[in-house]
Amino acid sequence: MHPYRRILHPTDLSPHCQPAFVHALRLALSNQGNLEILYCSTESGDPPFDRFPRVRQKLIRWGVLPEGASKQEVVDLGVHVRKQVVWGDPTREIANESFERDSDLLVMASHARGGWRRLLSESVSTNALQQARIPGLLLPRDEAGFVNQHTGEFQLDRVLIPVAPQPESWSALVAATRMVASLKPGSGILLQIYVGQSHDFPGGRCPEAPPGWVWEQKVVAGQPVAELMKFAEEWRPQLAVMASQGQDSWRDRWFGSTLEQLLGKLHCPILVVPPQPADV
Image (cartoon, rainbow, N blue to C red; front, side, top):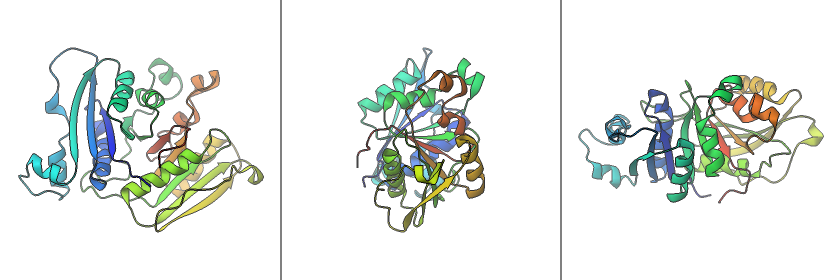
């Protein structure tokens, strides 16, 4: 299972993006990968490089590098950092940059808009994911996620994968195992949950679980969004993984897709996966 190694982190340089940044950095550090930090501006002016998150300082604070470490010492860790400023529509520029850099994962903050607010101001993060067609780790606003921004340590032993007949779930199952393989967090549970009747469970083969990890299944009855929120409140996953086909009806556009309804309500990051077979 190939880990995520080409990480693209779009940011608006606000404090709300800090949790997404530390997740992107942790992934790049774990896999000696490439980390591109991308800022898109719709206004002319000097590039605000002085406001970009500081990779060396964060690695020093985590105890990975000594005080006074040089840029070369970051490279010696195997982490290659690129800071980029582009001008234009954020959704389009994020997608274009992911194509040009052959990124295999987006990591970004999401404001978790829903309902009428979402209609007035479309979510850049979810729109960018639909255009980029690569997995994206979304960090809802005010959620710290599974990486401690002060120490760089992470806790990941419960991964929730909601499944349904449509969209197909194979890509989400692969992405879940790929994320675990990327971070190598020890033992844990990869839990498929289906809202419906047991005999309708969209079963099938699962990717081989990483060492120390097991696949489990659970079926609950009721309304999908409400039941998933209820179960997540009890089980407390540190990560949810979902395949998405985007908004495919007027009802989705008005109320938000299932994904956008759940974003920020599961109280954990969501790894969103295009509904085509992932590269393994």
